[in-house]
Length: 275
Image (cartoon, rainbow, N blue to C red; front, side):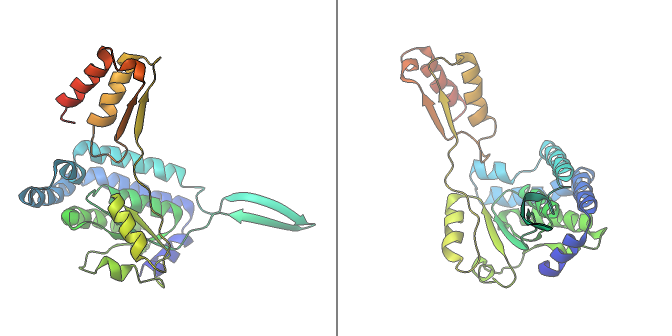
């Protein structure tokens, strides 16, 4: 179970947990063809269902995405050595008596995510770095990608006998059933749309939920801004990867810029990009 596996993960030295993450990072590149083959099955099924372009973009894995993902995991591994057991605060209460606040694992996490299969290795690496057991519930549209990526996660953990610490809930088990497993799950983290987050928060009665609010990705162009630079920022923040969770959602422009060519140029470039 994830609970038993999490204890094995906690018993590992920080260097061993970091090595698991690095093994996973390397597997993302060495098994690229297998990952993309699994992902192509999901993309084919999604295309037949006429999924929105933004959803297809989130669902899609590419060699560039996998390389970036691998690089990110190496960074997580390097930063993970002091995640557990770090003293945050120390107070001397009396002679030979000190009170310490120390970072410890939470226990077993349930992460529910939509569409994006690249979330799986990211979240798995973060769980390894913090020595938390992990249950993952992904969207059915990414089932083939998620299943193969989980094979790689298990392979990375296997070296130190902690392969049970992270599992993919791939059965037809209803999310509602998972939300009632307070004896087995310590924290739920929904990662996806605001509707998903609200639903999980409303349905989870006994397990705490760590959820995000509505997106607030704003860009503000001041009257004294470098308009050429501002134009590049506007285009990049919205058009480079619109499906990203940090893509621009609201553009605010100082009123003094509305009457010149800048505003019409902004409208023109956004219209050209299909915004």
